Length: 614
Image (cartoon, rainbow, N blue to C red; front, side, top):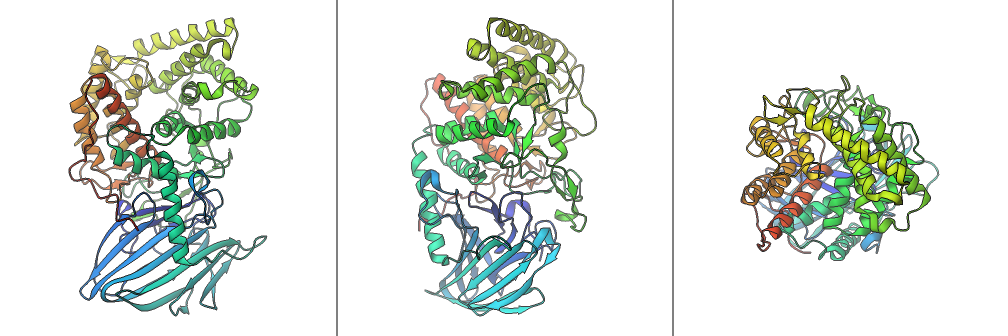
């Protein structure tokens, strides 16, 4: 049995890591200590890399949903003999509520099997494989369960059904009858220097997770009152689930090496934190969560960066602020659908990407009232980044798409250098003296003139991806979103049309002409541009087509195949959900400018994202 398609997976989270569960009841991905730790279940990347499956013995259909306002997943299997529900969740700390959830999660995965109708013969298969499938653990029976230990990891599985051991796996067969329940609890701990894995009862874990997630939602329920509230709230919860709560850092995705193209080699590790996402993330949190989350994000990035002077600004970090994310391949894994290599780490950390200067200063401007009085370290950081923008805007870089062949003069990087300088000028004497402000303003105007002159292609009638180029690139859609040009500027308006005609299909926008699939956040950028240009109805139609592209649980990958609709790339992708939140907010603002009331549109064909309350 294989791991299923990317978009067939559900997402569980506990504030430290994530697990992915497919429609057939198989946990195909879990890295218990933290998002970027080695997996104990890795069948997503190789059929032999470990899984934990609970499903009916015979043929079945399945329907699933999250319990309302949670990341607790309930899958209902229907067979000829009856129906059974499997409820899956990662444990939160007992009694943790609100902003406390995820801070001290016990690293436990609980599965609760409940008979609904008739009698359903069930099968459980438990095959842990440590270190991304490299290590088969010794399994030993214990009271009511089985222990697995190898190297630095140990897992303990407890169940109220008999378990059979053999060949590095445990199996069970049992019957789910109407009104009965079967409990499975899997706990993780380090082999050395810690106590045994936590072993709470699955019933308690599920109840606590439901209460914990709903308490977080209740804190933020009235924060967002704009359009598409259901979709925004679901996306906000996904972003919360992608947050490493001890530090407040938000990872780009829960997985590594899920391909942009099936069989391709652009299969990178996204379990890290990109500074590029910073400003957009803060805006999304500001809209859909609350300033507490945004404040944590800004505090995290300022601590991670440390003192910045003349050296290039790091563009990404580990969840605790680690800088060295050196990439290596896992050659023993076959890769998702044969897509190799499989990477751990990401060498983009070594790149120069000057767009990050604008992201940080723009985020600081958004948070300016919360930065008053400004601490000396933040003052130094913002001043140093503005000074870097004065020099670095003239240099080529790897760009926001992290080109690995050569550096170029990317238009989006120049625009974000302009953003850095523009926000520094707005801060004015709060971060520099009069001479600094004059210098930043002069450089800002130079950047603008260069972009307007060398970024524009008369033949295409559009701004292009790089200076003096004839290649379209969706990254130029950030220009109105950061205030570089108004969306109704004639050249910008022409660019939007040309980019949409050249790169879009069925509402999905590729990044460039040879991009293998539509890039979700670029499509949402186009929504924002159209809304700002006053084409609100057209923006609504595009938004609703995009919102209907989620999987049945309301989740996005990074990309979606323009022909088949299949989700591609790492999953779930925070950037995609951040794009939805910000596009909904931009639509709300545009509609308010037109003097019309907010509506609660539900896209036709959108998957069910909520289930029954429990």
